[in-house]
Image (cartoon, rainbow, N blue to C red; front, side, top):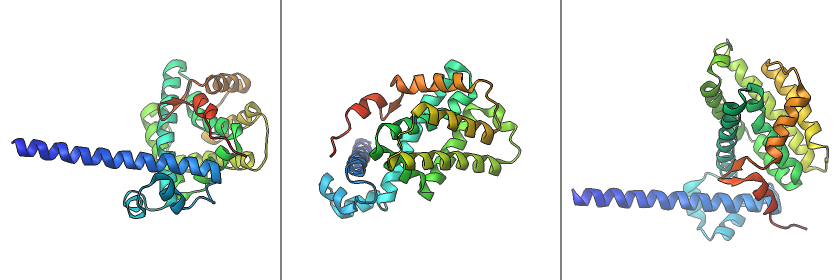
Length: 238
């Protein structure tokens, strides 16, 4: 029995080390994506920064896109948890539905380099599929009544994909010099989401102010850290 217990402990330790290595790779990759741009970052760059052997990285991730996908998935889970908390406080479906997009747009508006990372995530087919799957599961959990009214689940996925595409395209603009007011952009995105999801919003200005205040207050989290703290600690660039 003792040997079995020791074996389980050793196995757990190996899994923990694997997760630590994955997290180290993701953190290094995202920092490089920020400093050099996603397209200009190579797997070799990530290997050199982490000090992890090339083969070890490929044992954990298929390629550079897979690293980005994992980072995006982590972020989306955090954003949707924030959205769930917002819904529990406000009992307002559209506020919760639009919050993940609002956070991404806020990050994009704060830095062209962040906008570039988010844009590349939105144009990755693997990331989009993952985004839609996670969002659909979350929507079923949080808004079961609304989901019951959607007769065609495939149409729901098309609607979510349309919103993802709209957010990605705006992030691309931020990445290429657009400096439009965040609240003005969010106003447009609320209109797009309301029409696409067929959920009416009777006072768009009030909704935009409510969501923007939540996001701008910094009281939303990514990886256990407030996004305001993340933005303030971004690496210095030329």
